[in-house]
Image (cartoon, rainbow, N blue to C red):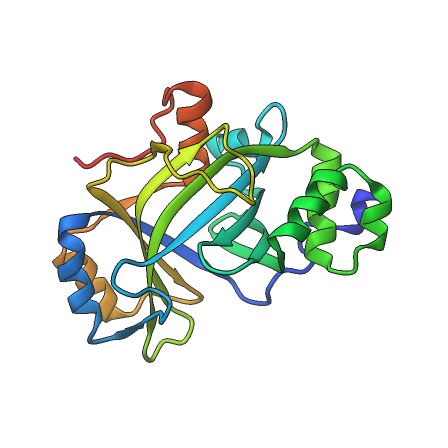
Length: 253
C-alpha cells in the first residue's frame, strides 16, 4: 500500500475537537469536583479514586513525533497503544493535530492481539493489506514508513465528567502522572515509574467541539486555574531522553 492511500484527512471525525489543559493542585481538586457536580455527571468508571490508564507511545529512532511537537508543526500525529486497568480491552490510537483542532481515531482489540500484531507485523506490508480496520492499517503504515517502536510508557489515574447539557463537552482530571522508558510491555504495565509531574499536581483537561460554556469559564476563573501547554508523551520523552532539558513538564508559578 502506498502512503498516498492514507492522506492526513482520511478517517477523521467530521467535527473539530479542541482541548484546553490546566494545572491543578490535587488538594484543590475536591473543591473543583464539588463545583462540577452542579453541571456535569461523573463517568461511572471513575469512582472516588479514578481509573488507571496505561499508554505506550511509539516514535521513530530520531523521535520524529517528539520534535514535531517541539517545532510547533501545524500538522502532526502520534501513535499510542492504550489499555485500562480492568479487562483485556486495548486500543490503537492515532491522535493528530491540525493547527488548533484535534482528532483522535482508535480501534479496539484485545491486549494479546495488539501485542502480537505490532510485535510481528509493524513492518510487514502483507499485514497492512490484510487489515480491514482503517485505523489499524494506518498505524501499521506509520510504523513501517517511520520505523516506529515503543519509546515511553505513561500511566496515570483519571476522573472524568460528562457535561449534563453540552453533549460534546468532557472534563478529565489526571493524577499520579508517571513514565517508564524501559518497561514497554503492553501486557505488563509498569508499577513503579518516575514522576512526570510532582504528585501534588494534576492536569485538568476540557475537551469540546465548539466552545467552552460560560459556567465552566466561571469555574476556571473561580479556582484560578493555570492554562498550560502540555503533552504527556513529550514531557515524558524529554525527561527520559534529554534529562528534562526542554522543561516540557509544567510547574506551578
